[in-house]
Image (cartoon, rainbow, N blue to C red; front, side, top):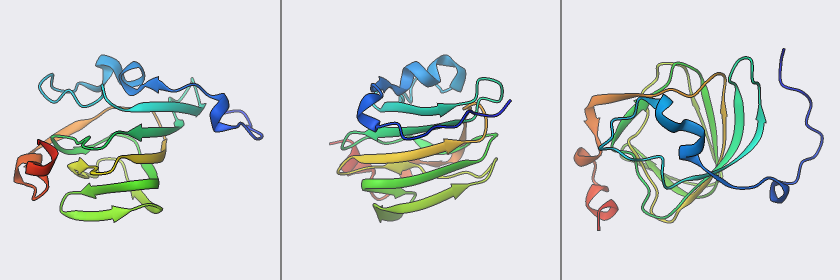
Length: 145
């Protein structure tokens, strides 16, 4: 079964919830990274059978990941508002991203905060790079002030 039709849901009618309540321990995130506590999400649509999901994610200024990451499913992101660094490249919204399954992206950092429209084609999981870490990025010092 695929996700049902959604005909005009106002974002303001969907409550914000912590991203950690969505990802939980299933992400296999190393405890020292502790990156999912700070974001908020509004679930727009979810397929309970496949795990596919569309959501808004809001990250506060200074939020960052500690390493490049990849997922076993495809991910599409639209940076609606704010800014982000993916690796050493800086973007401002609106900007579109598409990461095929297994593609490493990041580390990610937002100076001003960011509002995203994110779609995953299956359940969220994450693998982190041992080679590409935030410590090697030019923005790392600003992220840790």
